[in-house]
Length: 531
Image (cartoon, rainbow, N blue to C red; front, side, top):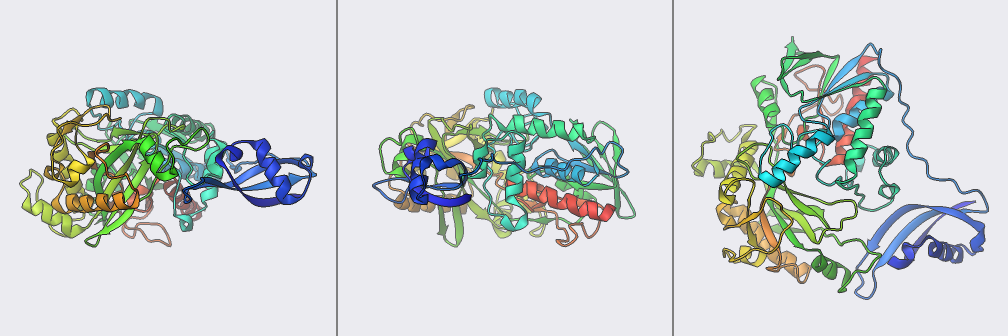
């Protein structure tokens, strides 16, 4: 017999399989020896009580029958070496990689063209960025095999359940080497130290099945005939042809947006969020969330999620990284962008999170119109308006930081009081910080919204508003500032046949899992049209 039950356990009991069996036997009214094993199905932390933190565990128990280990999703991959149909996939992020796997399942050969380097070679460019402030425009935290998520954490949490099968995506990650816990934790996370190996395994499987993967192949042109895409041209002079093209270039490929505009392919500005990254000592966040001075050995570093309406603007936390590190994430010289990531154990002494404010078209236009800048003031309906705004803030932050990826920063209370910080606390951001007045970097309405948001968050989490925390500018790559519209039923661009915008860069995903689901969805539609 197999039976699912839910248990409410102390953290210590939840970490001990033998004690879980004791609780399960009591709940099921059976002898402990009758339970041959169990599979964890769902697990979450309940820290609402000030007296005790609980673990809510739902598991499947096997009683008086052989225990069966969990089986991951089975991919029905074919050998597509000689397939009559090929699809070009521009970008090797989660959308592109999962599109490739789905195409192989459906008997179609994928050819992936990635502008950046493979995960191993990419590390050297990230090291140069962190140690020397040198940005390689084609190989950085945003560009390269695996996309932006590979070296910025590998968070797998999404609310996009209507866009596809989340469990299938998580199971595929587990089949390629992710830990089983991503299948049952409420906020699954792989870790920057482990995700590159999984991405490599996916690439090797694609190649084994007859697909092709090319690195340092920056797409510079679309080959169009009678409003049908026939292929693409790359910066090194090569031409690639295919029956369809999946455009999965991510949220930071500004040159692709400019190319589409030059080709008179319809694109539109998409609201996004911009702000800062804030870092606290992890022990402080633990004490606030777990209501204790020491979380012990059985609780993970605490996280948080915060949201506040300020003057009809949403202020909210984004990509919270317990036990994490702040990293430089610019894609061009002369820009300052920060992001956050955590290793799988989340064992660094700091907790960081993006704190951002929603940006609308009118906000960006007013800012650019009133600011002296080398960036041309666009028309208020320019589809690249929000992209220009994003770039302008990043350039201002770079100049304020002083160059070499040094970031402008303030202590949190000083930020709220419009006071330059006499000194800054220790911080995980390796290129270094420059004490600055961030109201000289951020647009006034964003700065004011963050000030009021921080004060409100300090009321919600006593101790959160503190000068032991540091505010670092700028967190600006939260999502794409451009959308490439597509017909949601056919997933095809209404103007260009066989061109399929996909994932975050197209404005139809927000994170690893939703991008992967969108890649699978697009691949399935293409396969149906090629049959």
